[in-house]
Image (cartoon, rainbow, N blue to C red; front, side):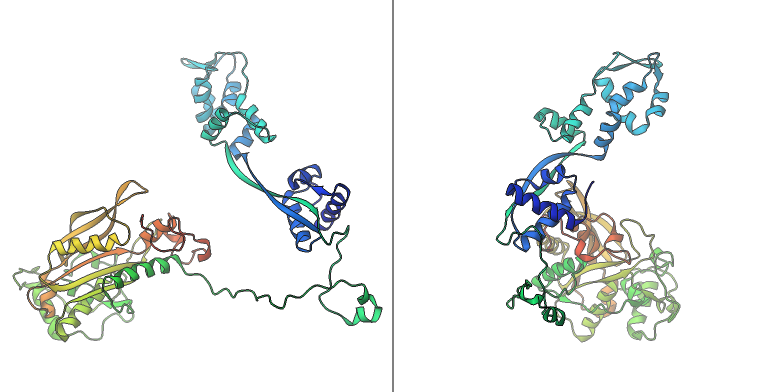
Length: 499
């Protein structure tokens, strides 16, 4: 556009305010002077702050053209481009598509046919009319000129996504209490120079507000994962759970797999699925008596189990790895509880786990697992389902389904599905089960003691809550600033009742 220098714009603007007394619409004024309206608004805000003018904010909604519509204004609508591309002698479908392009053809061919501008006379497409009026382009030009159209026309253009509503903001302006044709910049200090030349007598000075508060110190922003994690922790604590220590990312295969009655030939223990450490490659010590009981139950069984019937190797159990699940922490805590003397407990943990997986929009090799477990006498599958209804009910998920599943260390096991009200479908939200006797009894827990447990990821509910469809935007070295994330379902970051 024309003038963009703010000082020049300010000078012209003040002169016009002085001559006419009032500028009714800053948008019209900017258009008449070929000046960008954003520059004019910046000038008005500045002049208002110094009381040279008084301003009132204006706002109105208007229809604006989308990029596709702007192209139609320049080249004609898609149907007109298709019509004009059909010669009098006709053209084949493939030739027409190549002539106008895939995008124009897909829209224009259908609309031109429905308007009966063209018809199919195999193998050619021919014109039915000699000439047509491009009403779509005419309507778009009318909107571009700021004129009104009928609701029916607006509805059609909107359905084709050619126009959209946009809120316009501007100002009406009158003279202010300190109006002048030229702004005099107030001095902030009495300097040696103005004292020497005497200009201090006529100099305008900036007022000081000694009651003004300083700028707030920005202390950073909580990451969305931390907000949702805090919400989950609050739910667990409200249900009487105790948090387990999860500060050891490096774990031995014994606690991560063997103590959970997971056989040493299980696919999850392969290097393609698990990160094994080179240094230190092996764990320093393991509880020998417990290790022997685990070895026995793997090889020959016990506790009414036939075991797996293979040669269990200590060197496999000693291998260090990055823990693949926080259930490794659960196995340590249950063993400790057995050694100290059993008493009913409720435990939970929320922390990182590591899997050797291919990275894509929904998977990372590092993520967070949420786990809860209850250890008590006489627990049943009914207790597990009841607790899950209570837990997920506090998240706002009241519609649950359970699907039988297999886990090496739980029997029975069940995948948990919740009905997503926004997606209108059932989605998997976690896994659950009752720890097997082959896992619990070698620890020293008394017969009749059962453990019900469930787990889910932290990233999935966070992505749903904040409307993030790529996990790499949420977690990892390419993540955006946390201030850029706004929850789509609840303004304060708490877990929304609808999710």
